[in-house]
Length: 142
Image (tube, rainbow, N blue to C red; front, side, top):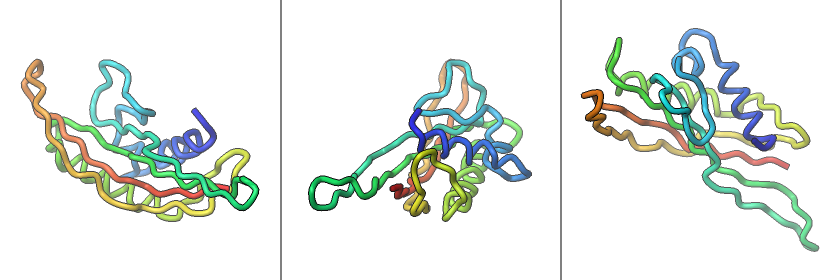
């Protein structure tokens, strides 16, 4: 994990109060993929793109990132769509101008950019539906 991944994950894990991302995602917060046999609901985050900004002389001025952050849930105590919607809504709030620590860098901006469309996949082995919903967050660091 790079410094931005570590800072973003720390912010998600720290949101553990009632209605927080970590409280809702009882299966954990994972980068790229959840480990095999992870129990839903959980959150997956990953870098979607990085567009560095340079000044004259090829001096890096800032990095412009987009991160895809998704909630995954299955029907359990409440419906999967309700669970992923709660997590996605919390992600929007949490990642709009957060206090985010990025080692060796300065966070210039972090904000909700757009929603990730809700998806439903059939898990035939377990005879259930699995739901995914999330957001794209825009981050600038220097």
